[in-house]
Length: 254
Ligand code: PGA
Image (cartoon, rainbow, N blue to C red; front, side, top):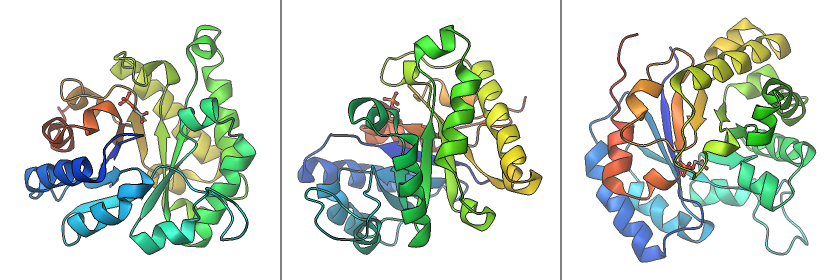
């Protein structure tokens, strides 16, 4: 019932030419896949070019960030409306790199969620604990706080275009992946939280992606977990072959 989503977060990588090469390498390798919602998130400067390249294909465009105001004196920022205008269907918010390197608070992330919902853009809402938080058994408290504050006052109908991405910070870019069991445990917790905050139907319908060193070699077993509905992929989304293999994952029956 939940269509899997595989999203590639290109982070701060790729010139215009490199972005063009990557997307044109990807399109034919995933063209037959109708079972997965495929999303790529290039840097702002490549959005227009990638939008043109994927037009008419089964790949959707996302931005990696946004500013919650529609316009005004906000030097260096980009609004949800402009991202929609360039062809984005989703925007990633709350990525741990934004939280850690740029000091983004749950409150700011919540205002971004509202701004995106207001213009009808899909949201990829990232949460996740640090290694220290996991080791001191605070994982569930952290996830609870991030979900509660990040989604504050977001209505049930707005949750329909929101995807949660569980990304344990210790697994991002480190080559360390959460085990299938660790991912499943966190995802089940997040789904239970959504039941508490919304209702069973919303929780059941909301996709929860796993992120953190997803690769061709571990995607199949991660995707076999009942509450893992997709992946947010960093490093391995920068190579067309690797990302295509992840998109074309083969979940095993468990
Ligand atoms: P990674 O990044 O796949 O390189 O670990 C994931 C992410 O940050 O979304």
